[in-house]
Image (tube, rainbow, N blue to C red):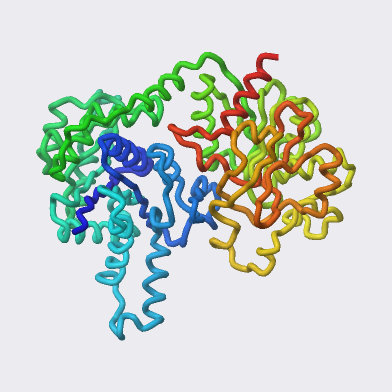
Length: 537
């Protein structure tokens, strides 16, 4: 009999309280106690996935090994747990309804009226349990996006209610994350928003088992008692989540509060093995006590919402800790870089990273940043579109191929050094149709990139439609830019570098997706090392 336990994490009062971080921290503690744990995110929006969403709307679109375009919270799950997620770890309302409608079109409901209950809720429950039914996990944590009371979240809350009834209290519990605000004028913490939030949850037939209270100030025993009384939980089930210096402190804070013990007690599971966080805490110690500092210019076009580059900034933290170096990010909007101000805006940085993106807005600014890095021997790192910009810049300014460009920006460019992939030529739909997920790449042994990875064969995640045009490969290589990483099956150029430069690498893939606390990505580690060297010149 499959005896997977289910933890549901809901949120109240306001969004952005950090359900994903609480879920990931709990999962980390349970994992360190010897349990096999995974986390999934249920998103209430009607898009099939975030792949077609503007980064300003949703932040970064995270990509898994199996090619799912997912919510950025899955990045947190992987960074904390150091295990890959998949298509099954992120479900949207759009995907649920699409599946039910497809079944209805095929006649699978035998003429019945298709309704939210039971058809939509059955589909949600099926998706929740996919990971549990594999037999790979002792505990599945499910984060429900949005806040209790949102119209779009109602089918999810109802599905949770049904699952609690079906599984029983020893197999399924609810953690409700809520806000206990501090009113400066009154000089006190207020519990009423939490009471209302729990009341709203209970009106949906779901009673929380554990309350996790986000707060700026310590929650006293009296307030815990009051919350327990009014919210129908035990006092020891009221957990304080005080504002932390960094998200990487949260597992330790939750350990101090005993969140993992409370959960295991509810499930009647043994709690003998204590969480082992030595490696984690060593990472946090190095992160908080750097011995040096570098400044990296991050050139992007969505920098108004820094969550658009969440995995990159977290990879900087991992690589910084690895080098015992504080990585200070200078955010530079690519649209703001002009021929007159580029030098002023980039002067003094120890490294330049040109970030991924789509479309022609801000492209010339990215090309100027590449040129500045190349001509001034500043360590350069180009990711996806950033790699393509490096190829265009080199073609224009070294090969003198005037107006060299990508067919994404200029369809009829005279020199399409970046071109639409052959497999993409007949694609008309936008969602989930790019080259996605993990692909193999073979590295040249005598190269900067090989020195970083210390291995010849790598696998990295992709998200793109356009590629290096191999018609220009010989010309470009003869001029001094080398293709040092190639997909062995397709011949697609995955990596370019300039050997005569101190550190100049462009990659077609997204290394930031695979950087975790326990395994900082070798490319980011090497890039920060190069920036550190540059800072000492």
